[in-house]
Image 1: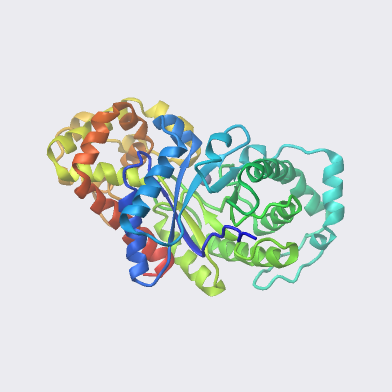
Image 2: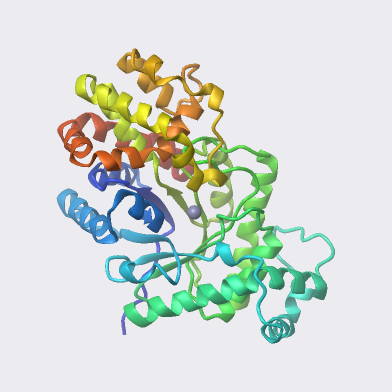
Length: 420
Ligand SMILES: [Zn+2]
């Protein structure tokens, strides 16, 4: 009998747009391990980003395997088919062993009334006050409430079940990690909604190990969290409470944990996340993604000369095509056009000026979140440059790698997993 693939307690999603920084990213996990904390790397790249860059999941797999071999990493690691659905999953099945099943598009779609009725009937336990340690449920948890939530989410969960079974059919039972993501939608899910979603997931026979709800507040790409911190803190802890309950009640895997998407640089919630996972003694998956590409740009600019020139050229192109670059990410960016410097101004910047405008140091007066977000979605510009970009990245590897490792370890792993 083979043992099911298990996602360890602490894991970090590390995106790598151009598949050149896997070693530098892994170095950050190695640093954590030398401090006695195991943080497992998961290389994630969504279908959308693969299409923009013109790459495929096999390249992410090759880069991950090569880094692991080169650095002698003997702990677990995974390659994530990030935000896939039924129409995009197939080419990920072989190279990936982690699947982020994205069914946010189906939220709010109706499912047939028989399925709905059967769900409500099966889950009478949800229609009265539950004893959930650490959670004040509030009132109004009744049949109508459960029917309302099921009406909104059941079609999405059913679709997740279809995707899950398709993966399982090809990879085999227990041979992959499954996550269900509902973060790319308009309104956040409350903890009670999450509980009902988990019940529906269990009904579908999905052994999910992580779940990515949409949390309260804004999770813009590559910049800090914007929202009510006290409310986030309470919601995050309540989500953990309902997950623990659902594990026992519905027989979900014992290690199910929250996955925080667009987790890069959410500095102000890192403290609350760390305290909550410590208090509950549970894990978390922090998905950071595009900021490694920004560290590549920082490294190029810091290196000066041709690197700085190329970074400026990328900014000028991104600025010229800002509407088109931003539109696929409209829900997750918030750029103030008035704060974007004109390219001819940037053209005169020193290495220091470019780096300090881009680097996410909230205390630095030179830090410019609008410029950072534009460049965050501007990786398409570098992708179009092809070898001209990649060759320079390779030539300036040491400056870049230092930035990639430090960023991941100091600004993400330390505060979330080590509480420092
Ligand atoms: Zn996501």
